[in-house]
Image (tube, rainbow over all chains, first blue to last red; front, side, top):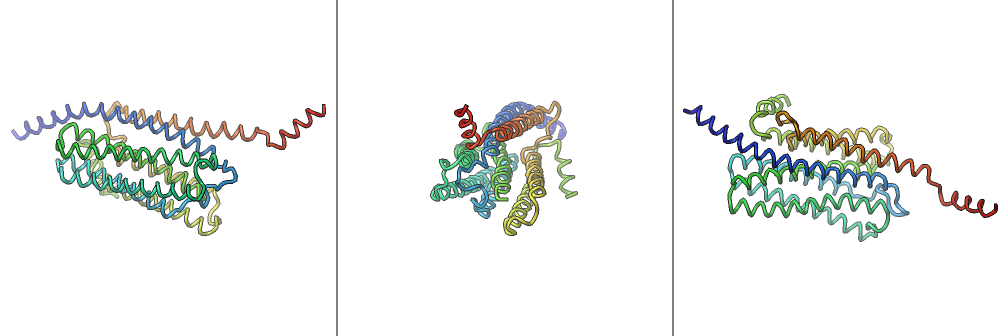
Length: 202
Length: 132
């Protein structure tokens, strides 16, 4: 009896898992094309980063403690998003909502720090108009920021959906996709952190 | 480390991702970020004399690649799917495309830079042409 129940549950789970597999695979392919987009922007940055046109070079331009704070905030956000997905599998709606709100607030903090950095650079006269290096810097880091901003909008709609419908099949699926998106943005940030900020400050 | 590894193996066939996996990925990402940051800040504090660039650059590159792999495996669950592994295949294809785009751009543009004439060279050339 017990065994039959378990077998039923397992069967239902595999059927559901298979349809979810197709969606997550499709989304994975989208993420990979987004990877190629970022790769082209990294290539532009790498090619242009010495073309400073008498403006500042990347060395000494950035505040490293601020960048480290930004990085840790985004990493924590990615981790908490993973906790939300784990809680969703156990059907803990309240925990999912709180983890997602923390994820969003950390994402917002990250975006706030990034925009402060941009504002300060522009105030000092180092906008994207000053040199090819700064154009490529703002394009690369700004595109990542734009992804984070759209992720935050997605997150708000997701929170609204989960609060209305609970952890139904479709909201669980969307949460999984959002998780992939959010983790992916953190992987891209590793390379921005290393190439733009760390290697750029050497 | 041995305990977390065994948890990963036992959860392998159930659902992608366990708490142990996320914690492992998070802690190691923090450590690798910290090491990269420490290396660079030491370098900057010592007025760029601590280590030569040819030592620091590969270390920073390796730290980034290891961290990306950790997050791909423990956050994005790459390699946990059953055969045929389409997800991994698309990832490998993307890595090849990225390498072609990035290394190709750097190679071509570096070549162009080397063969480009400077302003003085162009002026000299034009003066030569005028005097003929």
